[in-house]
Length: 403
Ligand SMILES: Cc1ncc(COP(=O)(O)O)c(C=O)c1O
View 1 (cartoon, rainbow, N blue to C red):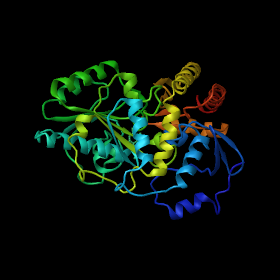
View 2: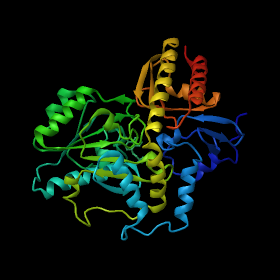
View 3: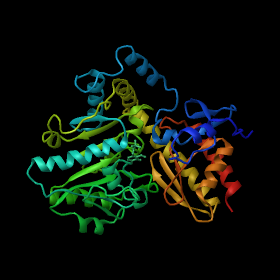
View 4: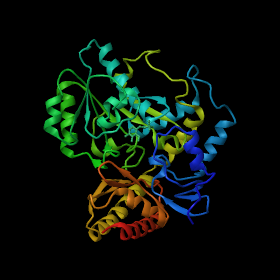
């Protein structure tokens, strides 16, 4: 049954919330595991997962327990005082990744701002003030604050916001020659996502990884890997860079890290941390104790080999099913992605919005990525049966809208 719009949350949203998002006319009232339920009791398989945030699904028991336990001691004390929620999460993250220090913030864009500031400060303290240039990629997405926006390789979302922080250059994704032409002894950092998710679910090529690692050796620049969407187990390894062998100095994390609470992190190599001092950077809320307690519960789950093995197994299952769908519907140009960021590239005869709407009618939430790509971001603990259900629902959706 279609929901009435009168006196609804849609009307009130329009009236009271700044008009910055294209929102669906749907009112969710409850989540459970891999499912969401709307006001009318309709059940949806949630393959959006809060845009890669709900890696453990909805109402995860370990997350709820962590929230409750931390709320019983304190919600917030500021970064003026050391506290175990932060220290314990840092230890777990560093153990899972091999990095040396953690900085906590609240979001992906803030984590990327942190990476950019730490990289620039590193060279400044070393007396290499010429090293300002950060080379990033066309169609990348690093966030909406000014430096992260400047790093983002999508000019359309910078339009109208005036001057941007300088010295960001963008080269085509996986174009080794273009990258080599831009990196030199003035380069501060090469910055990339371990999988370009928003930009169209584009995996990084082995040649690009080899080029990045060798340019770093040749010119002594830093490498920043944005793991905000692709990290935290989504590619089947704890960090995407571990899967691809990217030799990183700084990593940004957010989304799944907080299990639904706002939490971001920068992971640093010791040599970078050694060049930072108290006062160089900071945040009031970053590393909130409740969010960090949840972060620890999330990391403890995701770092388990059997958890990551499920990501790989479900990825293989979904990919095989998506290939079958692609073979049935000529409007599907191909299957993209790895781990549990998967995409179907569609041709111009089939706008991705039509598939999203049809899937929703079937009781399944999916989203898009740049370039008319259908994107799937299931919870990472999704089951084999739920993946079969997803493939059945998607096929029905395509049957309705694909010519
Ligand atoms: C790769 C990547 N980096 C950064 C961001 C920005 O994160 P946030 O929206 O938490 O600021 C996103 C958000 O989609 C992202 O996908």
